[in-house]
Length: 239
Image 1 (cartoon, rainbow, N blue to C red):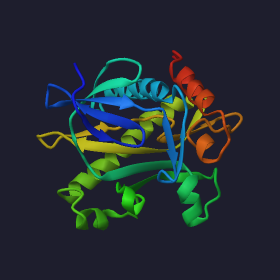
Image 2 (image 1 turned 45 degrees about the horizontal axis):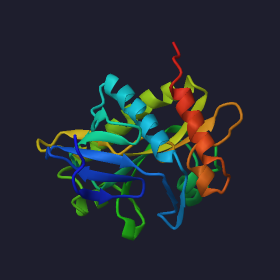
Image 3 (image 1 turned 120 degrees about the horizontal axis):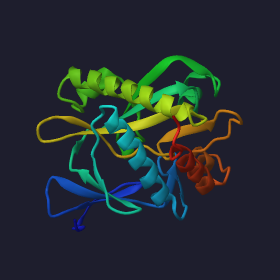
Image 4 (image 1 turned 90 degrees about the horizontal axis):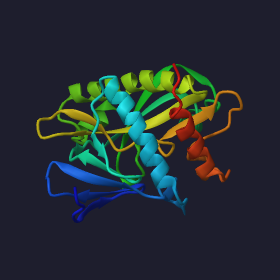
C-alpha cells in the first residue's frame, strides 16, 4: 500500500490517502506538544514507540470485542487504518484525579475516584478543546442522536475495564486516558487515533513515577525512557 497525498497533519500524526478510498496510512511523528500546543518539543524515536504501543493495545482491544480502525502495521512508524469520519468529541476516562480534573474541581492529585468518570471534550484547537456536556454535543451537531453519546460512554467504560486490568498486571496504574472514535459509511463506530503515553497517564504502582507525556508537560525529562518502559511492560507475557 503506497502513500498518496497528505490528507491531514495533527499534533502527533500525519494521515495520507492511499489508492483505496476506504484506507489511510497513519504516520506517527516524533513531535511532542502540551497545553494545546503552547509547549512544543521533539523526541527522536517517540513516534515509533507510540506506534508499537498503540498497535499492541488496539490488538488487545480487538481481542476483547472492541472494533478499532487498525488494519495492519506497515513498519515501525506507519499503520494502515480505516478511513473514518472522526467524531469531534474527545472521550476522556478517569480513574484517579490528575491534570485538569484536579485543577478544575480542587480534587487532590492521586485521589482514587469512587467510580470511573467519563467526560466529553469538544475537539476544536481554536477553542482549546473545551469540556462539554451531552446537551452541548447535541447543540453542536457533533453526533446524530443522543444514543451515540451513550454508545461513546459505554465504549469508554468497556475499554477502561480491559486496559485497567491489563496495566495493573504489569505494575502500572491507568490514571486516565483520551479516546477518539470515528464512523464508517454505514454508521458503525470504531475506536480511532491511538492509545499511548501521549494520550494516557501511567503511574508506576510501587514508586508512583510518571511514565507518560506528563514528563514533558512538567519538564521532568526522560520522556523516551518512560515510553520505552511502558512498551517493555506491555510486551511481557503475563499469565
